[in-house]
Image: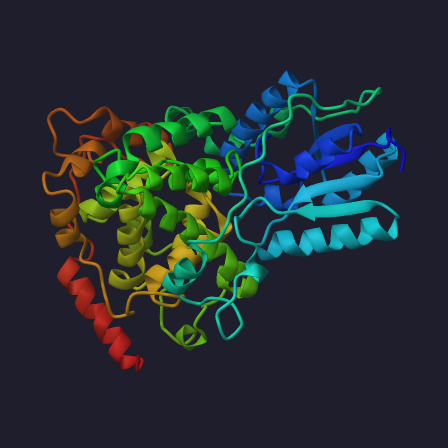
Length: 473
């Protein structure tokens, strides 16, 4: 292959320039690099909020590439067919990409690699989306970890290579390559008016992600182990939306956390554990891909969950109108910011699957529609963990009490005040923004009466335990 044979760098959930093994490898060849993003079927099936957030990220990547003399080529269609077309147009002899681990991406990538190699194209996949490739972490008896804590103990002292530097220049093609306009794709269209609200809280692109990490390490990691459980406090890293689309690598975050740990910052180890929790989700998706669509524990297949997404109790849950303040505040936070506090996620998931006895798939699907930090592995594992049907769960019969949880983690009701407007003389701006972000068809207003609980904490717990007992769990 000549020094002028182009390489196609196929971007997916790796929308950054630094610590990018595939991009670094392409640059090291000295050959021209064609930066490409494909709007394929996997992109098409994204929910409204993830698709909106992807549009923002692609715009940021375009700007980053332009600074180093490159263009991001945008094409829409079947991934393999688009790649073949761009190969024909550019004379490219190689296609590089970063590995993904969810079943849809793996199926696509396996087919693409096989077909390109048959055509004589050098098709290579690289690490980068996780720190530890799923097939490199095994239990002492062989096989993958099905419980988080032993996995953490196994990898916590592993060597993680230092992050790679971003290229300062990309060799470009002599000819122009046709590209779609990002605005023509209309990725954010389904967000309607909610996009303008969520945009106020998004931190988009590689530079913003790095600044967010630096700020967290400098000012908040010290108390992270405690403050991450307080939904009213700015105590988390906020990096989930950036990690989801690969605007920052987990390796970069790991090394920042390790540096903080060596400096004696008390919350750093908890931050590192959260990064490995993300790894755990991806390892499970790789080894047991059914986790995204089926009960991870098959004995839950017979459990009589409600599967009616149109049920009134599901509608109340989706709207943040259950009458349970912790649940409603968390759901409203999601509509305004695109994200939800980690403690809130556990509470809303437990309430839906246990108090309301609705199938975890309902919640999984709704989060996929509404979260800007949606992640296929973390979302699937989180919902199954909460419902009891998944791995490494607390005992299935443990039912979070959303009232006592609020007393413990939001004693002064600061979180509730920030997100619930009804019944307040001077509602917070964030609480009012909920009414600007939600669909107008919901017909909700801040001067409406706040609802009574559709299912109380006590009644929901009793019903859940009764259902478990009747099923022989």
